[in-house]
Length: 312
Image (cartoon, rainbow, N blue to C red; front, side):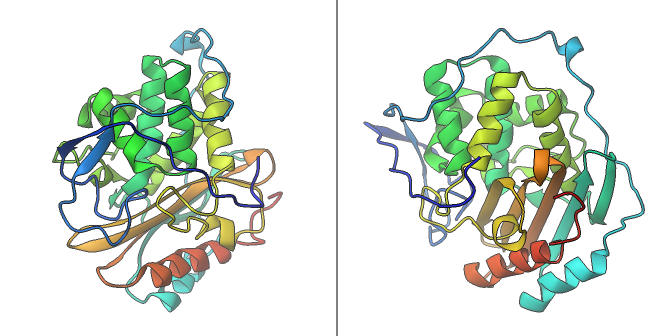
């Protein structure tokens, strides 16, 4: 995994584009945060291949052979949730935080804050897009697109795959496949960033990636998250939260966006040696709070966990 020197990836070429509807989420990962409300989603019809090397697809194992997905269990929250929340609100006083830290070795939750509150997903839904596409079966070219979509949080590719695999229906399929309990598709077809997720369900997504995916699909996703560059496809700095706040190995999927009501910034991922921990920090802020301030608020919450995760 390459967590250290961030490098800017060349933007993926597109030979043509078509407008499929309203914006996935104004300011969602891959669309500039200054985008206007109702900006069209642009879907490339053809994209150039990248130099990323991803494992060739292998025959999918029978689902009955996959390890069971663990259900997070409350361990009494040994990490002080008040300290984590206080760190976030000290930076942005109106921060709403939903968080879970899950220890995959002990199968216990170490931190629980509003774990079942729904947040708009922004680009976290790209994990569901990827899992659903891989479950349906994709070729090598689409696997490269999935890698770039996850690593650089590329909205154009997300929109392309969203349409190709059925839009909101893929959220429902993925939720059923993984066993998500409070994840809901967006009300409007094109607004994939308005998918609703919870901290508990995001833990379940990462557990599924780690325990139930075929090895080549697991490697594709974890490598993409582990090689996320400092700046996303839209040049937004995506090292807030876990990367800036925790002195540990990470593989991250971030999310940021706003609509005409509020802003969301999320930092989620696998943390520590052998990916021992799943860390999920979901935040919502009043519109106009400022991207830098909100990013620093998420980083402060992550920083409150630094040194508190044994073996990380």
